[in-house]
Image (cartoon, rainbow, N blue to C red; front, side, top):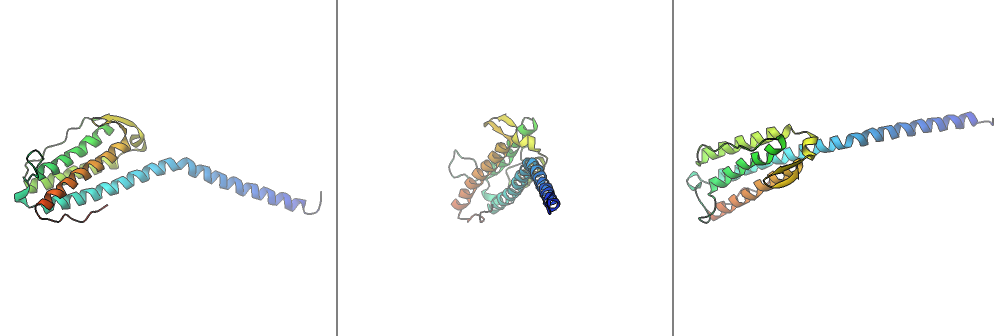
Length: 185
C-alpha cells in the first residue's frame, strides 16, 4: 500500500456516498413529481375558476335589472339566460368526472337578484367539487355530450365555455352603452 492510499480510498468512499445520496434524493423527487404536478394543476385551475367566478359576477352585476331580458337579436338568449346557461353548464362539465349525470338546478327567476344568487351558488358548488378531485380523476378519460376527454380537458372546457358566454354578455353590455369590467385572469 502506498502512502496516501487510505486517504484516496476514504475520499472515493465519501464521494460515492455523496453521489448515492444525491441520486437517491433525485429519484425520490422524480417519483413524487407527477403527484406534485397534478396537485399544482388543480390548484392553478381552482385559482382561475375563482377568478372566473368573480369576473363573471362583475359582468352580471353591470347590467341593470330592467335590461336582464335584453337580447342582441331575437334568436339569441337574453342577458339573464346567458348568465343562467353558463352557470348551469358548470355542472355539465364536472358531473361526468364524478360518474354522475348532470342535473343542474334552475334559477328561481330571470330577475337580476335571483340570477346573481344562482350564479354564485353554481360557481361555489363547482369550486367545491373541483377541490375534491384526485390526480386519477384529472387524468382519466370520460365521455360526455362534448365527446371523450380527460378530466383535465373537461375542466378546461368548463373555463372555455364560461369565457365564451361571458364574452357574449359583454357584447350585450356594450350594446347598452356600458363598458364591461376590465378583464381578469
